[in-house]
Amino acid sequence: MDKYDAVVIGAGNGGMVAAIRLLQGGAKVLLVEKHNLPGGFATSFRRGRFEFEASLHELNDFGPKENGGDVRALFDELGVTDKIEWTPIPDAYRLICKSEGLDALMPFGKQAYINAMEKQVPGSRKATEAFFELAEQTRAAQAYTSSKNGVVDSSYMVKNHGNYVRTGSYSVNEVLDSIKMPDKAKRILNAYWCYLGAHCDDLSFSHYASMVVRYITRGAMMPKGRSHEISLALCERIRELGGEIWFNTEAEKILTGADGGVEGVTLKGGRQIKTRHVIANCSPHVVYGRMMDKVPERAVRAANARKFAGRGFCMFLGLNKSADELGIENHNYFLYDTMDSVRQYELMKSIDTNRVQATVCLNRAYPQCSPAGTAMMYFTTLYMSDAWGEVTARDYAKTKEKVANIMIDRFESDTGSRIRESIEEIAVATPLTYARYCGHPEGGIYGYESQYWDGLNPRLQMMEHDHITRGLRFAGGYSMRLSGYSSAYFSGDITGRQTVGDIKKEG
Ligand SMILES: Cc1cc2nc3c(=O)[nH]c(=O)nc-3n(C[C@H](O)[C@H](O)[C@H](O)COP(=O)(O)OP(=O)(O)OC[C@H]3O[C@@H](n4cnc5c(N)ncnc54)[C@H](O)[C@@H]3O)c2cc1C
Image (cartoon, rainbow, N blue to C red; front, side):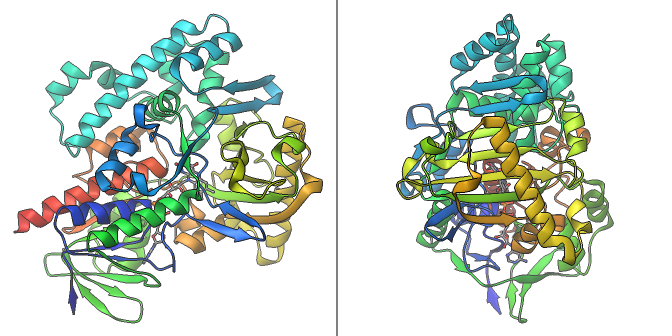
């Protein structure tokens, strides 16, 4: 039997970063990936003369060299920053909610954002400043928690991160109300909620605020070669450090010993790998439901208590005219029916009522991403129920086409640009595509939903408690940092380092 200090299952964002951390900690590592290429959702694909980005709208918390964020610092430590060619995203977002008369282009940069908000909502300056102050304190407190692997000194926390402790158990809306944020400013500020996939009555303030402050103060970046460029850089680094990556290799079983702890992994086809440490870059539902014969009851209960977050739908268009010719002005659009996120969330449960879209025209950030005289767009939405699970095989193609048409109509009517007649390539991914591609239940692309009791703070503080089976830890969108690129990278960082600690403790 082959023997490794650790096996990482899945070469998604979390899995690849975990593998590098393990290697940097001196472990002998095998990374297995069921596909023939790395990245999970972090990849690209070609149709005709277009190379489409599969998922990333913009990378948060990377930032330029002179104002680098935590992801840049992590990439520097991993040794991958300079393997990737980056391009900045021009503006934070354009929010359009026609029914509420909103059309706001919001810039990056704290002062520029506060000024733009004041212009949109006169009298909002003080509240927006208060938001950024609280958000910055929250970010600092979370950095402290991560640096302690979740085992924090509560008196230190109260003394040094008082506002974080005070706001930690409240929702976005509760805290924004308490700082007297005018209603319209609240609606503009809350535009990013669909990136986290939980509505603002549920979403914890500290989670949302720490994301927004990172976006606005550092700006967002995009790798020129799509997210696949990052995935390739991470793989190259794993190999430079002596790690092994086996593609086209699915892990079928995690083997456990008499103590219930990890003893090995069985690959599809029957080959067995001996290891006492597994990092799973997939969901606990899949690991406990399919990959393990003996599962502690506490683990089953913990997984079942959680709620699946948004199931993905994405339409990709290659257009035979330039963004200028088509009248596409911006990189990143949020198009909503209502800025009441609770109502909007309800509408996103059904195929008939979901009209939300987060739409990107990559040419606005990187004009050369498609051939001269063309443009490339992707339109993403989330379903807050398993609505696509109820679509029959017979209705599937028809339903895809219906939703794609609605997305095109909405973009045209909300922005005034004309794209339909210029479509050269079209591809559509539904929750079924995502379920098949990464193996996540119901086609979820955002892991487990952030809820009051299960948001970022509780997960960070309970991560050792969640370590139920000896030798088994999780990285990626279903783990302690929740979903998204930066979060998945951070979870791989934490889990990789924790596992190095576990290996060292065993001697
Ligand atoms: C359309 C779309 C748009 C998005 N937009 C953004 C965005 O703009 N910003 C953002 O931050 N996030 C965005 N996301 C979410 C982001 O892509 C994910 O949160 C993140 O990539 C998840 O990373 P992960 O580490 O969980 O790995 P995943 O991407 O889930 O990959 C898991 C990997 O494990 C492999 N695997 C699973 N089981 C096995 C097994 N048994 N054996 C071997 N291999 C296995 C899979 O093949 C896959 O490669 C978007 C996602 C989608 C789909």
